[in-house]
Image (cartoon, rainbow, N blue to C red; front, side, top):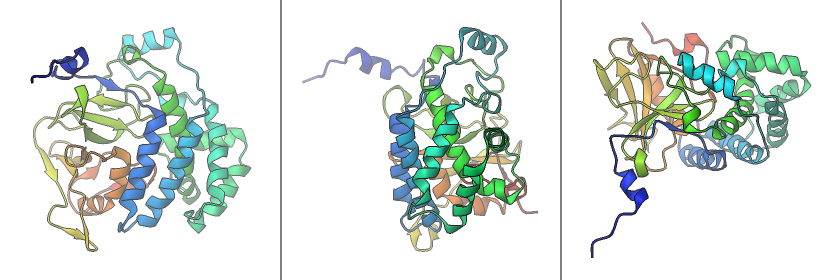
Length: 319
């Protein structure tokens, strides 16, 4: 018996009009990310850190259920669309709701068994900061201006609080609100560089490549075999850890490094067709070995994972 397609099924088969932007759903975003981090921690060289992050992301999930951010007004949306610029550049649009989220996360992590001992004094220091100092630190984190050891240590906790706020605000937008940005290599909502790209499965997004924002978790469509850093379509290659073992653990074959001969940068491509549970930010963290191997090549990483901050010197390939 032949099944009759319903309207939603028919739309899902339309490949000429792909979904341009996928806005985050915080209720499922953090739950799926935490589960993936915990799964990828097993046998991983940085397994302890991934387990700590899984606990942190579960705390994000709890905080996301209670936060309420303000949506941009019509004038802000119209201005961004008129000038093809991101709607709410992150460092310039800090909703004060993130401060309460930070306090919730610090409370949740203070006695967490997975907490690295070195982070305990960092939590104490963050609690002691007044609001202006916290906001200054948040802007440094968002802009990547992390040179001091204290900033680097605090960055994952600060970024985790900011992610909850930015994801909530992005979730309140409509696709029609989102401008077509130029360049198309930064998040059209918060102007952050993507942490990775992802080949999605299911529905209208099946088989399409999206760039994933590590700050607000918005995803925007970009065609395959195109550099997500300089937009070149020539000299694109893919590097993997296939046929290699990491301390006796099979490598993650769903993650590739997409390299560009034009700009000499790379960014990871996470393929849900190979692993339906793959999650861009989590899988990027779990494949640090790929970054270590890429550091021995001519290609520099295009952008950092916000939960594993590094200085610019640490991202530069070896001569």
